Length: 258
Image 1 (cartoon, rainbow, N blue to C red):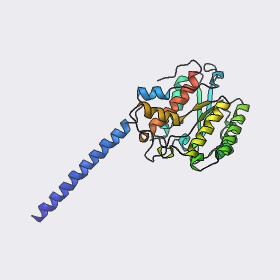
Image 2: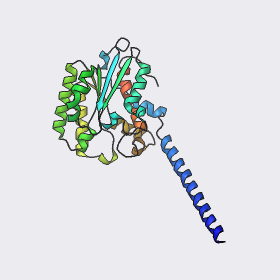
Image 3: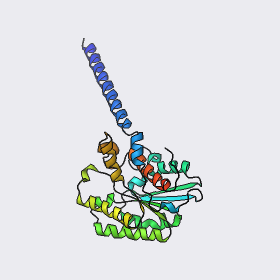
Image 4: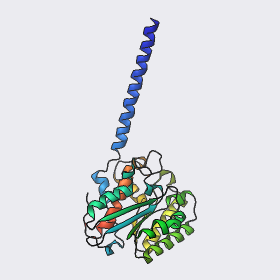
């Protein structure tokens, strides 16, 4: 009787473990399903900011693009490297840019703007790009970099890029629920937007895209973030890639691939 009781206890444990595993699988699948790029989200992410991209002739000019930034550019938060925004952007542009493309990733986790500027001679100018995507702001805000210093550095960096006839796309702060209402976060974001506006360069606002997705769908802030609650997940990486793609191609009368 004692042995039968032990077997029954083990059987009960196995059943409980199986049910727990099934529940976890169901939750995981639901979470992954929430990250699918629906036509509605695709449309939200596909609103271009043309800026100065008109001067690139898509049919005649090979595209050599460098993306420089911090962990988001490196691809952190994506389930695999190819699903980071730079990887997805390279795939999209490879289909859409008739003259050929080279997309180079120069993201380094933890970088603030001063780090990006310091390595630009090696990681930007030495690579001879005709377009540079600069993703910055989040780490500066989190590390309380003074807004005036950040804006001055960004302005100087944009000046250096434009002096070399390099087209610029700025990518602003990631939307973080914990930072909503933060004066530092809002200040850095506004500085990025001001530099884009004053210099007539293109801006892809991840912050505003996240707000628009939440306002126009049933998604919550966590549906756009990785498990760490900080970095963009596959969906937000895809949204960023889509927005940059449309920024580049929409101004040129070329329809990006859906």
